[in-house]
Length: 142
Image (tube, rainbow, N blue to C red; front, side, top):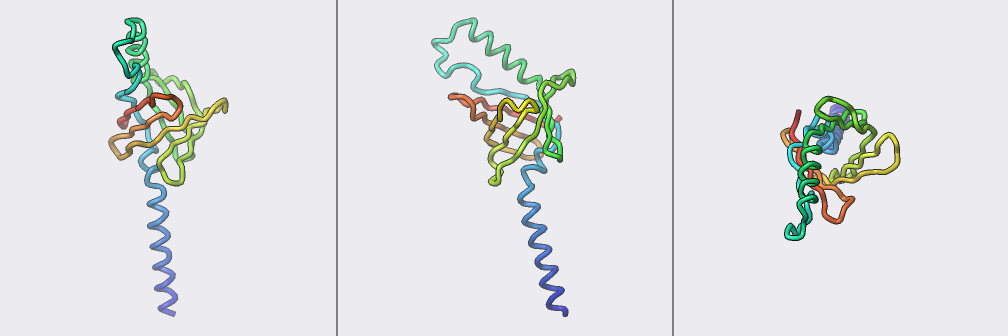
């Protein structure tokens, strides 16, 4: 009888350990994140960028760094501006290998995929997969 109880408890401990490892990325992700830096907005060869293009890139970066992304435990997310106005909301999914984040807006007109470059309690870095020059977004907790 004691052997059965020991095996049962050992099995429960192993399964608990495995499930907590599988949810590590989600545990870090679930919170409000503020975009603090954006990379790769301007073309790689900056010698051929016009003043207008440069100004557009600066304005776009300023707009992107005012965004906050909030991820909830129920796999919903929303993106809001500094004034807390929600601009996009939908659902998210994390790949089995925990290296890709898929965002599906409630309009369901597209699915945005991001490589999770780094994630911890204090930082989140996502790299877009939609463009030829990947956009890199850096976040810190709100």
